[in-house]
Image (tube, rainbow, N blue to C red; front, top):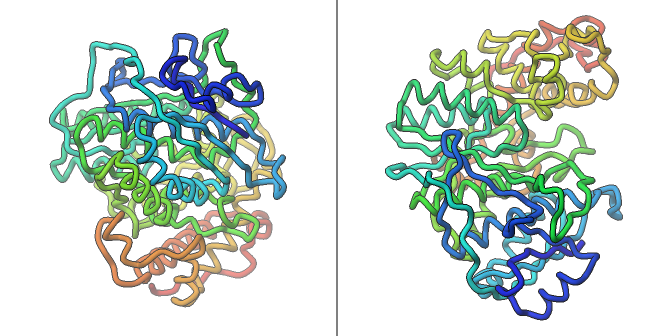
Length: 475
């Protein structure tokens, strides 16, 4: 599919841009005009704010928005392999030479993240009008940006940075209401503990609610959302650049960062790669090549699982952790007064970690998949579809629990090769082998299988793959 970034009628006079705007088959993404089809909003502690962006940073965030919206417009099932799509983006920018230099790296970054093929045509644009004016602007005196999703990992990451004495701008994306609400509640908890050391900036990128648009967008027909972490990080980097901050943190447990496929059918980008070391390495290369941002992007939990993180956390965070949201589709059960489905992979990872810490509460999930009983809330049955992730996860964890070091290290690299020294670039420290990741995988697997086996009903043990008893092994 062809996509063009709209920069107005006068900011680009290139014939290719003009022709694209007149072509009904081209998707036009307009976040600029009064009748825009895409809305971009920033709020500081709940109030609208303005961000002054230089030309290069504004181009970067609009590229990310274009990729994010384009992803929704083409159904993966229409591709030859029912997954990999082709996108051709026409992007007018202030400095085409910079982006031409970074083009190959950008395409490679997006391909690893989504498995789609993105090509870019860089045209020159002139100045753009300023964005909306609001009284609030970026606060001064902060030294760190931290992505803040409303989940366990981002909460613990923000707390770690604040406890080290940093002044932290927390950046959340309001993708849907449940996580947006969690972000606000968790920020209030941190603000109560650390005062003005922290501020929350919530960003919203979505189709405009305008009734009419100059350039109507096709319907949204794809919801796999593999490129969305590119947008999340772009928003954080945009804020960091505007605030003069050189450190961006993306707290995510090391298991999800590596995200080895649970099954062969989930290989490649069928398993998300939102914080994978290869992705972050390629993104940094793109940012540096385009001269957009020369700071650092780090994951402080690169060598820890969520279970490790909860075992080591400050007890004062327990209530906040319970308020956090980890579900893949958290608004699905909001009418039932719970935010966790209980059967998706993030819910299962969360539950294993909560069990190990002694915090498990089956009533906080719509379905207790380990008990195998109908939902306590609405009596709906645990369908075969709702069991798919657990049926993949249990054998996967059991295989890791009994794997040799060589086998474990091969799982570390199952999404692709990266040097063991990559922690120096994107992690909390450099290590000289893959052993810290291998040890983390084994610890996590033994803990999950041990905790789940004790709490799983006899019937569900047969269904979920507990064919033999788990015998704990030393790490």
